[in-house]
Length: 320
Ligand code: FES
Image (cartoon, rainbow, N blue to C red; front, side, top):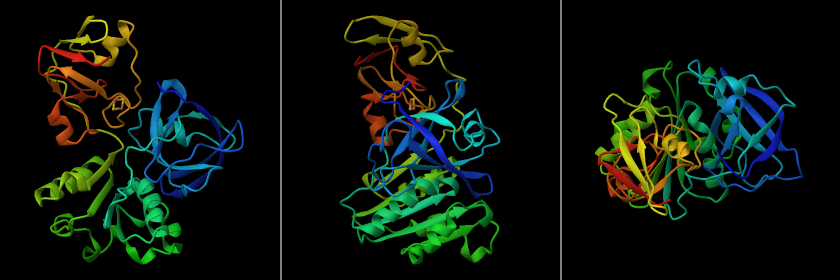
């Protein structure tokens, strides 16, 4: 559930690689679309109430269109299959752009690590960094060349020499050695990573093992791995403004329990990756299950994601 709905039309659908299509979206009402910055995403509302987040991968100076690219996922829960079934001319509802993955403008240099379809926000960032003359390198890792979107766009770009391609099915010499690449870092060097969860986990684990400061790590998960619910138990949440206490059943999310009691929270991904539902916690200890908050943010226990996170304490008092 989101506000600021914008109606758009699919002006162009194009195959970008095996199982990847891009969609050019233009406004249905009025000439232009709200501005965005590199790293932004939009929520796309699909049939059946499915809402998915897709990074914008066109030039942020453009206001006449948004470009997104979508990987067809055989395990699709409705998002990628719904997108791939769309044809040119279809109309959609989307949110205004949001940016939870912005460039750090104080960076002295940037290391961009893309895994597969994770290239979408990072390509936009690379173009932005190149336009400002900033120092950066982009490593683009994937299963094969035929599955890698936007290779032509990269090869035609002014920063092609700063892009390093690594494909699993190519010779061993070009494979990306995460540990070796992240073994050293410098003050002011910022790392950005986006891609499949396993790739991101490996990159972030290596960076943290090598002592990269947390504030120099930037990441955006597309989807979470399976969330372990085996030990979920019921607990209470209290709405601070009204004092109302609501029981969250062991098979319920906090969002569901609140909604059943007339307290509606904004949400989108329902799996702890988008940050839409983040809510302040005034008392109690959350049991964080999201991929959105950093380890430091989680450790502060002053906010949590009620779409998937639970409680270690008997009650959480929420700033609602
Ligand atoms: Fe996306 Fe909760 S709805 S993090």
